[in-house]
Image (tube, rainbow, N blue to C red; front, side, top):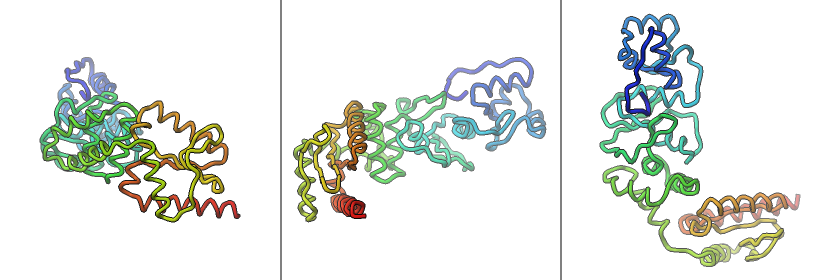
Length: 312
């Protein structure tokens, strides 16, 4: 059975045995499970023809009806894969809420060989340690740290950074977890990219004032209008304010915004400033370090848009 190690005893007539398996798996069963429960191959064929079983993948069926159910595609995908398969990559990231859920194929990681399956993206690995596997709603899934590592083999740097920060803010992931999974990740495709992200997060150690000075220097070098700095407005102190354009820029750094309480306070502050007619933009040290031209261009675009809005 998915998500449990013990054998599930079933008894009674044929329909009762099928129902007992399906009840634990969101109405999904595999041919192998039915055979193990004493349902013969000829009987399986007959009840498929009668419409009591609906094929989802080769050897995987929905019992009674094929209507969508929550986590049904993930359950069916695992049943279609070999023993030891776990949900991973983009699917695991959606389950852990590290990225938005999207209508896409189910990603699963297996230790052995398996052919392609429609609607399932199979990833093969030679190593998936027990500490890298969790259970989510009775479905085996890669841990948040392993999931971020797997994302690094598919996604762009910025998407992996966002997933990492989201996991840390939501307190389902720690940097030490990622360091541990990287220590066992020799040869895995995403390891160098994720290690580079961690290295950039560690340094330099940036204070609020240093980050603000860096942002102000970018604004001056781009010859943009000078903002007011560290001013109070509507009961809050803000880092930078373009008063005529009603734009606030806050410089974030994980060292001083990296816990859940600070995260929530920042969002409340943004909401109240927005209600007072101000736009709020949040800027990170990594943006200033890695994407300074894109950042300055975005600020300039917002300022121009604000002036055009007020002129109209």
